[in-house]
Length: 77
Image (cartoon, rainbow, N blue to C red; front, side, top):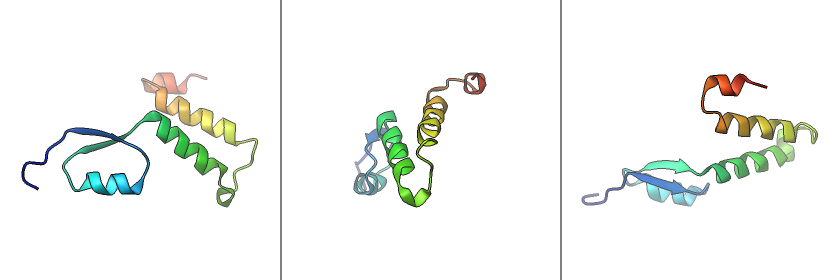
């Protein structure tokens, strides 16, 4: 595609958006909210057989992983 350039695009977790953006030369990033929303929805799906009591723990670990600035911050309890 001649003349179609972009550098960074912040998108939602939708296949349609990703497919449209993928035809360009854009970097694709998901915002933190949508990543966490997708993780929570994944944890809720019964097909994954995750215990109800484990869901908040796994979600908290995911948030800690996302927001840790360094490996040391991640390893601190």
